Length: 237
Image (cartoon, rainbow, N blue to C red; front, side):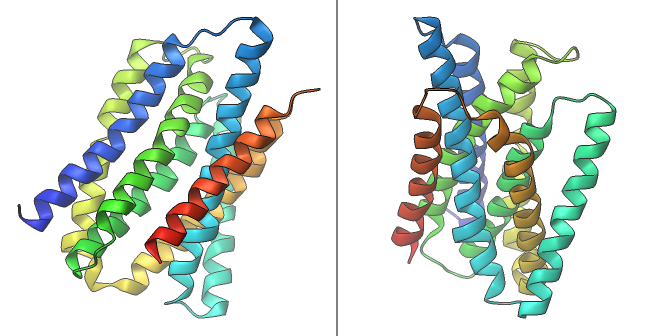
């Protein structure tokens, strides 16, 4: 199979884990009620840990290998500021899409990086696609629950939207394969902006909603999410 077809297929499959997570969120029912609530918070924390690991172990380290320290810090701060502005705009419009923004901010640059890996003959593309899919699943779960509380989209429509968004994976992956692989500095800048934005969203929207009184599964969810990133980092290196 040609590498570009492999990129398209892998990024699509990784993207489809978003609607898969949304389907679980739509149909999950656990009793008693306190356990169901704790499970939801644990999944929220797991997604936060996975996002944080993407920043700490993938986006920032890889971008820092290309950018200078001043450039890295500058673009990281720019990313935080951009996503702060975006969060303010969403809050003013009462839009329940912060989890969705975090999910796409993680998915798109990683899909681009996957395409760039295949274009340069790297051998970590399959594992990277697997890790992207693992991250997208809890993020799809959390984003569905957040959006399902809003007035605009509910239920099956959210799942359909997420399935459509999965197509962004092949678009980003093929862009990285055919175009961005020739501009490593631009890819590094995108990664650093995404890293700053994701970190802002984790501490602005995800972490404050995780804690429950007398419940320890949610913080353990964050630990497990970060552990997933550590495992992926060690396997890739």
